[in-house]
Amino acid sequence: MLDFLLESSRSGFPTLPKLTEDEVRRSFEEAKRSFEEVRTSFEEVRRNFEEEVRKALRKSEEASRKSEEALRRLEESLRKSEEALRRLEESLRKSEEALRNLEESLRKSEEALRKSEEALRKSEEAREEGSKRLILNQNISGSD
Image (tube, rainbow, N blue to C red; front, top):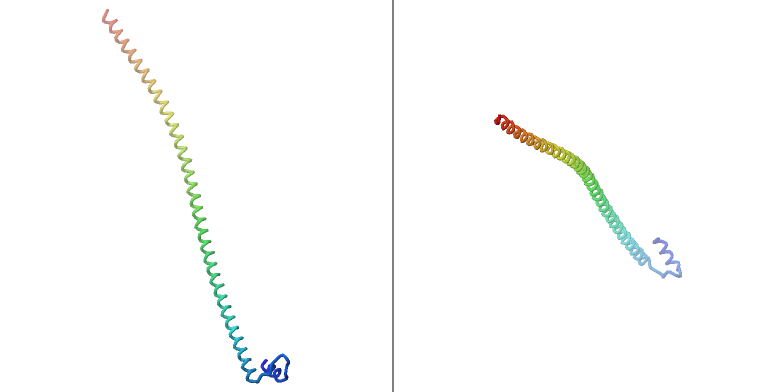
């Protein structure tokens, strides 16, 4: 490239000004430095970009991991809630059954109480009837 610029300058290319070899070298070195600066800057930008991409990827992976963990905890909580609901439903079913049994027992107890009261009433009537007969028999025996 340097040789081309020197030759072009010497041969009098109409678009290029006449430059000395030192000017061409300085210009070439300056262009080379500028290119290196641009390349260095580009590589720094590329490294920064890659680092930002890695950071974003790590954050995304961490957020994804946390989301998955939260989802797992929610699923576990839901499973436990469903199990608790099943236990409550079973407990309610058993309580309803126990209530029906108590109602039946109460009905039978009331029936037994009613029969006992009836038997007691009949027994009292029979005792009164027996007392009346005893008195009547005593009166009849005493009047003889």
